[in-house]
Length: 157
Image (cartoon, rainbow, N blue to C red):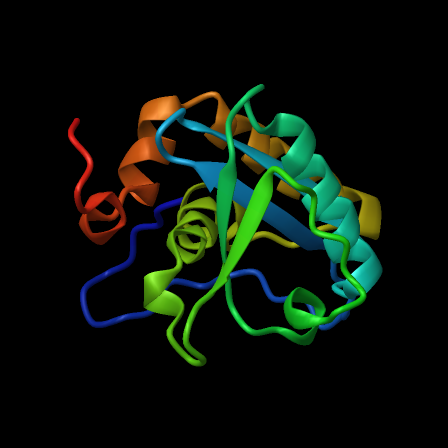
Protein backbone atom coordinates (compact mmCIF):
# COMPACT_ATOMS: atom_id res chain seq x y z
CA UNK A 1 0.00 0.00 0.00
CA UNK A 2 1.40 3.41 -0.95
CA UNK A 3 0.79 6.60 0.96
CA UNK A 4 1.41 10.20 -0.06
CA UNK A 5 3.11 12.76 2.18
CA UNK A 6 4.56 16.22 1.73
CA UNK A 7 8.23 16.23 0.79
CA UNK A 8 10.37 16.25 3.93
CA UNK A 9 7.66 14.74 6.15
CA UNK A 10 6.90 11.20 7.22
CA UNK A 11 3.39 9.86 6.66
CA UNK A 12 1.52 8.67 9.73
CA UNK A 13 1.21 4.90 10.02
CA UNK A 14 -1.04 2.84 12.24
CA UNK A 15 0.73 1.39 15.26
CA UNK A 16 -0.36 -1.45 17.46
CA UNK A 17 1.12 -2.16 20.88
CA UNK A 18 -0.34 -5.66 21.17
CA UNK A 19 1.93 -8.63 20.55
CA UNK A 20 0.11 -11.53 18.95
CA UNK A 21 1.69 -13.28 15.99
CA UNK A 22 0.94 -15.89 13.41
CA UNK A 23 3.65 -17.62 11.42
CA UNK A 24 3.28 -18.16 7.69
CA UNK A 25 5.29 -21.18 6.62
CA UNK A 26 5.62 -20.99 2.86
CA UNK A 27 7.49 -22.49 -0.05
CA UNK A 28 7.35 -21.69 -3.74
CA UNK A 29 8.11 -23.56 -6.93
CA UNK A 30 9.32 -20.92 -9.40
CA UNK A 31 9.32 -23.40 -12.29
CA UNK A 32 5.61 -24.14 -11.87
CA UNK A 33 4.63 -20.72 -10.48
CA UNK A 34 2.96 -22.20 -7.44
CA UNK A 35 3.53 -22.74 -3.76
CA UNK A 36 2.37 -24.25 -0.49
CA UNK A 37 1.81 -22.49 2.81
CA UNK A 38 0.34 -22.89 6.27
CA UNK A 39 -0.51 -20.17 8.79
CA UNK A 40 0.35 -21.53 12.22
CA UNK A 41 0.44 -20.21 15.80
CA UNK A 42 4.03 -21.34 16.49
CA UNK A 43 7.34 -21.69 14.67
CA UNK A 44 8.65 -24.98 16.01
CA UNK A 45 9.47 -28.55 14.99
CA UNK A 46 5.82 -29.64 14.94
CA UNK A 47 4.87 -26.71 12.70
CA UNK A 48 7.79 -27.45 10.38
CA UNK A 49 6.70 -31.08 10.09
CA UNK A 50 3.20 -29.96 9.09
CA UNK A 51 4.77 -27.65 6.51
CA UNK A 52 6.98 -30.40 5.05
CA UNK A 53 3.96 -32.68 4.79
CA UNK A 54 1.99 -29.92 3.01
CA UNK A 55 4.83 -29.29 0.55
CA UNK A 56 5.10 -33.01 -0.11
CA UNK A 57 1.40 -33.18 -0.98
CA UNK A 58 1.84 -30.28 -3.45
CA UNK A 59 4.88 -31.68 -5.31
CA UNK A 60 3.83 -32.81 -8.78
CA UNK A 61 3.47 -36.58 -9.15
CA UNK A 62 6.81 -38.08 -10.18
CA UNK A 63 8.68 -34.87 -9.31
CA UNK A 64 11.11 -34.09 -6.51
CA UNK A 65 11.36 -30.84 -4.53
CA UNK A 66 14.57 -29.19 -3.41
CA UNK A 67 13.81 -27.07 -0.38
CA UNK A 68 16.19 -24.23 0.52
CA UNK A 69 16.25 -23.66 4.27
CA UNK A 70 18.04 -21.40 6.67
CA UNK A 71 19.49 -22.92 9.81
CA UNK A 72 16.64 -22.24 12.21
CA UNK A 73 16.48 -24.91 14.91
CA UNK A 74 13.15 -26.24 13.67
CA UNK A 75 14.64 -26.69 10.17
CA UNK A 76 17.73 -28.61 11.26
CA UNK A 77 16.42 -30.88 14.01
CA UNK A 78 16.80 -34.63 13.56
CA UNK A 79 13.22 -34.97 14.86
CA UNK A 80 11.84 -34.03 11.43
CA UNK A 81 10.71 -36.78 9.09
CA UNK A 82 11.53 -35.35 5.66
CA UNK A 83 9.23 -36.85 3.00
CA UNK A 84 10.95 -38.89 0.31
CA UNK A 85 9.99 -36.41 -2.43
CA UNK A 86 11.81 -33.50 -0.71
CA UNK A 87 15.55 -32.87 -0.38
CA UNK A 88 16.49 -30.08 2.03
CA UNK A 89 19.48 -27.89 1.23
CA UNK A 90 20.73 -25.81 4.14
CA UNK A 91 21.97 -22.36 3.26
CA UNK A 92 24.91 -20.73 5.01
CA UNK A 93 24.10 -18.97 8.26
CA UNK A 94 23.16 -15.30 8.03
CA UNK A 95 22.63 -15.34 4.25
CA UNK A 96 18.93 -14.63 3.73
CA UNK A 97 19.66 -13.14 0.30
CA UNK A 98 20.25 -16.69 -0.98
CA UNK A 99 16.73 -17.80 -0.09
CA UNK A 100 14.10 -16.71 -2.64
CA UNK A 101 11.28 -17.14 -0.11
CA UNK A 102 12.66 -14.12 1.75
CA UNK A 103 11.69 -12.09 -1.32
CA UNK A 104 8.21 -13.62 -1.12
CA UNK A 105 7.80 -12.32 2.44
CA UNK A 106 9.00 -8.90 1.32
CA UNK A 107 6.51 -8.94 -1.58
CA UNK A 108 3.60 -9.96 0.67
CA UNK A 109 4.42 -7.21 3.16
CA UNK A 110 4.87 -4.56 0.48
CA UNK A 111 1.65 -5.39 -1.34
CA UNK A 112 -0.87 -6.64 1.19
CA UNK A 113 0.34 -6.80 4.79
CA UNK A 114 2.13 -3.58 5.70
CA UNK A 115 0.74 -0.57 7.54
CA UNK A 116 -2.22 -2.43 8.97
CA UNK A 117 -3.57 -3.00 12.45
CA UNK A 118 -5.51 -6.20 13.03
CA UNK A 119 -8.42 -6.57 15.42
CA UNK A 120 -7.63 -10.12 16.48
CA UNK A 121 -5.39 -13.13 15.99
CA UNK A 122 -7.96 -14.54 13.55
CA UNK A 123 -7.75 -11.32 11.52
CA UNK A 124 -3.95 -11.74 11.33
CA UNK A 125 -4.33 -15.32 10.07
CA UNK A 126 -7.05 -14.31 7.61
CA UNK A 127 -4.90 -11.47 6.21
CA UNK A 128 -1.86 -13.74 5.84
CA UNK A 129 -3.93 -16.43 4.10
CA UNK A 130 -5.59 -13.87 1.83
CA UNK A 131 -2.20 -12.40 0.88
CA UNK A 132 -0.87 -15.90 0.11
CA UNK A 133 -3.91 -16.70 -2.04
CA UNK A 134 -3.43 -13.47 -3.99
CA UNK A 135 0.19 -14.44 -4.61
CA UNK A 136 -0.73 -17.98 -5.70
CA UNK A 137 -3.16 -16.45 -8.21
CA UNK A 138 -0.13 -14.80 -9.88
CA UNK A 139 2.12 -17.62 -11.16
CA UNK A 140 4.27 -15.24 -13.23
CA UNK A 141 4.98 -13.19 -10.11
CA UNK A 142 6.03 -16.31 -8.21
CA UNK A 143 8.38 -17.27 -11.03
CA UNK A 144 9.80 -13.75 -11.21
CA UNK A 145 10.37 -13.55 -7.45
CA UNK A 146 11.80 -17.04 -7.10
CA UNK A 147 14.07 -17.64 -10.08
CA UNK A 148 17.80 -17.52 -9.46
CA UNK A 149 20.32 -17.87 -12.29
CA UNK A 150 22.66 -19.92 -10.09
CA UNK A 151 19.91 -22.47 -9.48
CA UNK A 152 19.74 -23.38 -13.17
CA UNK A 153 23.39 -23.96 -14.01
CA UNK A 154 23.70 -26.71 -16.61
CA UNK A 155 19.98 -26.77 -17.37
CA UNK A 156 18.53 -25.71 -20.69
CA UNK A 157 15.37 -23.61 -20.76
